[in-house]
Image 1 (cartoon, helix red, strand yellow):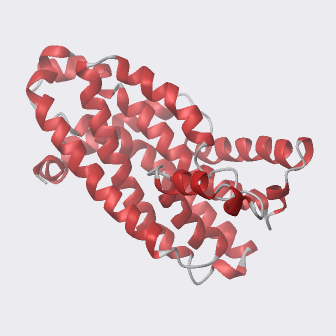
Image 2 (tube, rainbow, N blue to C red):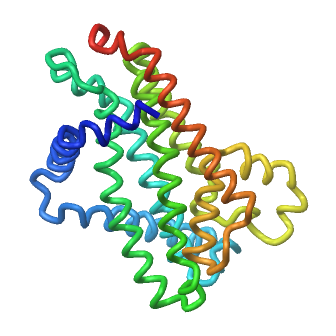
Amino acid sequence: MSTYAAIVEYRELFANLLRRDLQAKYRGSALGVLWTIANPVLLMGVYLLVFSVVLDSRFANVDHFPLFLLAGLAVWTFFSAALLSSTRSMLDNANLIRKTRFPRQLVPISVVGAHLVSFVVMLVGLLVLNAALLPRVRSTELLALPLGLCFVALVTGLALAVASLNVLFRDIEFIVAALLLPWFFLTPVIYPLGGVPGIAQRHHTVVQFLHWGNFVTPGIQAIRDVLFWGRLPTWGDALYLVVAAVVSLAVGAWVFSRVDDQIAIEV
């Protein structure tokens, strides 16, 4: 796709945009990229307290529940942060877009790239931690890297689409922000899909909808399978993730191509 080929063709410009986004993200921060780890760990502690102590939930009895939480939170944190940040990226770079003619798709993609650095740090940390504490994952956990790459592609296409649409329809950023909270709870990040034994049978339709109707779920399921459970992802989850990534990239490129000529005027 020519839309994404610009990353290679204008790699120096893309590198400068990425460097600028990283510097802006961590400017004045003592811990820098280590906040990437601190945020999911803090969330893990809160959810661990709520589900294990306050609610005494049965699915909190999952073996090594903190690592179960971290595997899901790492993926979701990247998804939500990259999507939310990229939505306003065109508007936030209005001066640059008005003054200079360059492939504007690089702007939201560089934002995703900045969050990708954080995602990679978190993923590598989980690979080391899980290998030490969960011997069962040592034969499968490296598969999290290609699966994670597919997930990054899915986020990139979606980010490009919403960033482009937000130039024309400023409500998009508010819609995305409003959707992320309920979307989080409808995604099996803090609970296993099916919840407690028997629920998948009693509420089969709901569970299937949460699985296949939410395009984030198969990616999290596949990555968690290899990174936490120590098993190969189901072919359905893996195929869904690959197809969703391709469709997302195509939709992102299509939407961008439709509004590219209007971006400099509308920002």
